[in-house]
Length: 313
Ligand SMILES: NC(=O)c1ccc[n+]([C@@H]2O[C@H](COP(=O)([O-])OP(=O)(O)OC[C@H]3O[C@@H](n4cnc5c(N)ncnc54)[C@H](OP(=O)(O)O)[C@@H]3O)[C@@H](O)[C@H]2O)c1
Image 1 (cartoon, rainbow, N blue to C red):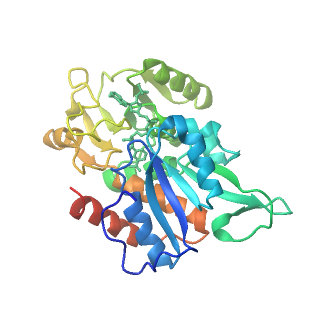
Image 2: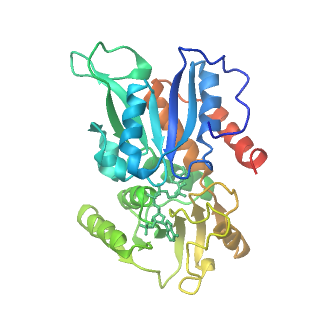
């Protein structure tokens, strides 16, 4: 278990009947998902626990298989697993197909009528347990941009940094939302080019360019993992794009709560937000898929605030 904060008081004792959920990543120790989900599981009175597991991407397949056979309810996937997992699922939900990455896995069965029954929601008889991949990141980023930066992405000009699992889902979702121009910058240029080509085909009304904007933008969005580790350089080359040319800067990284990018943004007078809101809404959607019950969003938000602002340094 990676989170060092104490479990919420309302969680019952661990027993042989307790079921597990987990976030798999490398690294994973930064993840606030265990704190958020354990608070929610306690509030819902579910005898489940949520843990963090460091999994090398070379062994992601075995880790997912292991979780399936150990009777896990479901998984979240974080850096660097979201793209790899698309090939590893037995089934893909429309959200994973649409946004091209998997951040939530639900284990479940097909009942005799062929309906999907998550293992967290009942017994569908003796048919084999399957893994089904979903994407809950894409809608979460749009909601968090609205709430936390008070920016409506429709018609906005957006500079997106990163084209990994989260960047890809964000780019496609922003294109679907109707941004006017999307600039893509990624360390591996070919990945950004492949994403741009896909957007041009699927969303022909969106102008997509590789490289830095030569104009002001409404949103700069960091979807790289830069900022997670102390000493990481900025995900943005300030010589190529002055940050005060952005209205709002959103960093998907949420630990540390104030990344170097967000510090630069605030110094330049931009609106700035870390990725806590995105984490909250993708997590709430995942919990609803696993449990079939409304997520206790207020409890989850409070647990996140405690974990990030009052918990582990
Ligand atoms: N707040 C949330 O709810 C939320 C949700 C999803 C993701 N995230 C965060 O978003 C970040 C990306 O996650 P992911 O799942 O997309 O990971 P990923 O699939 O592994 O992608 C990582 C991205 O970061 C870039 N990158 C990594 N190291 C770099 C370096 N040293 N210099 C420049 N670029 C570098 C990669 O570029 P290459 O293509 O060149 O490798 C790629 O674009 C992570 O920090 C994750 O924690 C947050």
